[in-house]
Length: 429
View 1 (cartoon, rainbow, N blue to C red):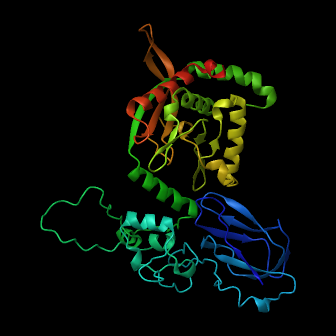
View 2: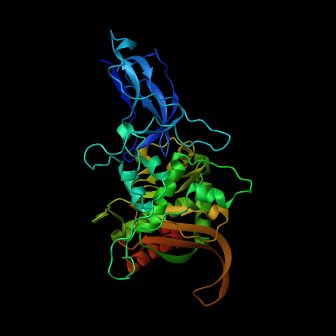
View 3: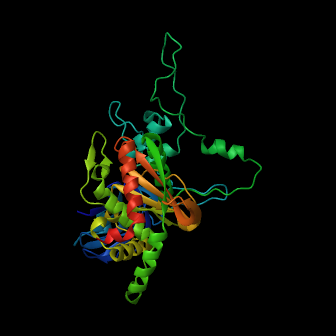
């Protein structure tokens, strides 16, 4: 019997992806382990390998198709003795056309076949968990939507393209205000925003998977995570002098340490020095981590990655530097595997190289904190002897999840980071 090849889940959180490119065509013979296609998730482009042997009998999803749900049949594989005539009874998946752009407005996803009603039996509505969460945030009743996913399943794109319907007011005998925790009003729709700019020249740029995910996750994080912020100025003169000495010694090995490498090490050690802060939020509890797994934001075209340096407290500065350069390079090429950018308990976002003095970063759940790092600049400071002097000062802001870390604990963590950076030689002991 012909075998349906299904859209794979290439990461634990993947619900849909883009079939970027087919590397085989109908009639080709494939063996187990052969690369058949390139699939884009919200974070990376990954190769999809064959598991079984056979002949590609039919390609069901055209390359370039976006929003292909996990477990959707994308092709049919014929085994020995089978022919294309055997496919009809086996595969019920519709051929999905590649997306096309029109002169009026670009299309962000493949045009779906006529959608089946979302209801299956009784009042049950089939929808992905992400679609349900977005619908709740936008105040959309899923029962009013038709899904474009397999068997009428409502997926993220269906909810994002829907407009929240006004909810009927509940009967009330008083004029009391709505209770705390009520759904927030949805923002303006695409059509409403377009109308605001009628007569003005603009270009519509559809969101790719990464930008959609960034928008959804950070909106959810800012709305649901109770952030508070702690700020410290850190003097870098001792670190810069120590770094210069080390780089001269490391030059024959082709290693050049950055200030960011020291920041990673300082944060990793601080999580060991203040272990109560090395934790993540897990819904109805916290998870206290033993190792210091530190994520570092890396800007790429169209978004960012946060690759994770695991066991960072155990690694030398040169090892951290080499590993970070490798992760950053592969992040920019979107070649990171999911295990390389998932996890961690703490993150660093450094905009100092862009000349930013200071800023507040948004926590990346389930992390409990993120350190925003600004540029080092010469500033007047008062020394311990009371004398005015000039020092290189770097501004930092620690964004903290108050569900996991209280004020005093967060202060202890930031103070430990500051102490490590202002006494860099101690980090090697």
